[in-house]
Length: 181
Image (cartoon, rainbow, N blue to C red; front, side, top):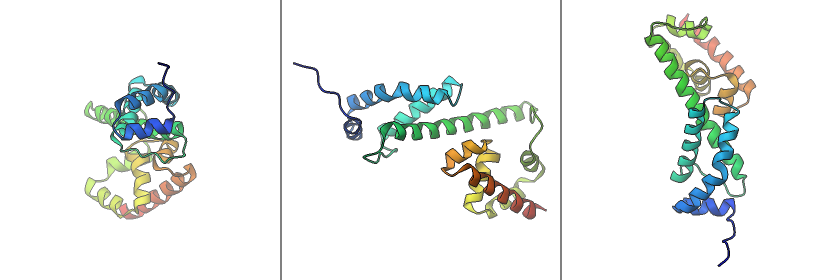
């Protein structure tokens, strides 16, 4: 009996969606190492990269990530993996920030204007001011200030151009200054 012909990406995805573990494993063998290598160019923390790869393929297995037929499977997996990596980095930064605060050290470097604002304003006032922001402005402030993402990371996470992130952040800061004055 000859070797079975290699399944296409679309066939593997369809079989995976139907619960075929062997197809899922073949998909992982085909793209797992590639995705991990690409993500390592974005993040030197191997544990975060491994978590992002695992979360990516877990989303594929569970069906929470939907593939549109005809698209590039590698690009689709990259998009999922990159978002998972950004989430992992954001979570790691939040944990690090919390540990520094608990250790009695607010910042290792000088705080940004946004961080000073967050420390200097009572939570109730700030919460109300944030709640009054439009959802678009609030999402940018959450990503860049509260989660500590760079403009580029926030743009990738939110799926908007970098310039839009900068403009929305400027508008949000202006509105927050007015609301908190």
